[in-house]
Image (cartoon, rainbow, N blue to C red):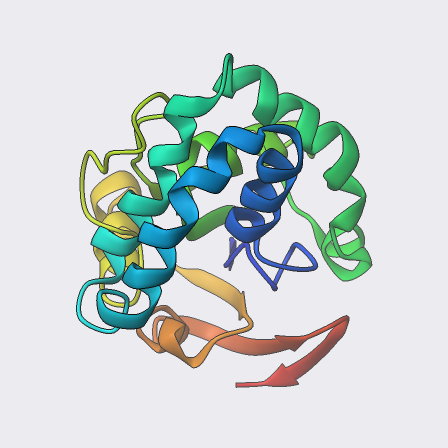
Length: 182
């Protein structure tokens, strides 16, 4: 089995930022939230990334249909999936991401992969329903969901995923379409 990070690994870019921008361009009301978000970026982000993200995801309450916004976003953005993933994809792949489940699962379903672990965020309120799936949380979530598994290959763009890389037979840093040994 292969395990992949999602943002900047499978996808060109960060899905949370791209979705936020997509919604901001279509929902001007979100502009009213920008001062609080900028304040949070300056003072909260370094201390509590999950709280900052939760404050950011509060914009979901401004959307008429968040589920429909996600589907329309992926209609336009699924083309951002990297070629290397499409060529190497396997049925037993597991995708693990700090991005919200409501955003990653629909993308991966379109690509034929239903095995996704991501941050549990309520699509209506933006509130976290559990821990941000980042760093040491990723191997915990993997073991909780699938038991003791053997990772043949692991792919990520970020050294923060070292806890998963250590569990893999082979691990790669993804830089664009380039795969570098971990």
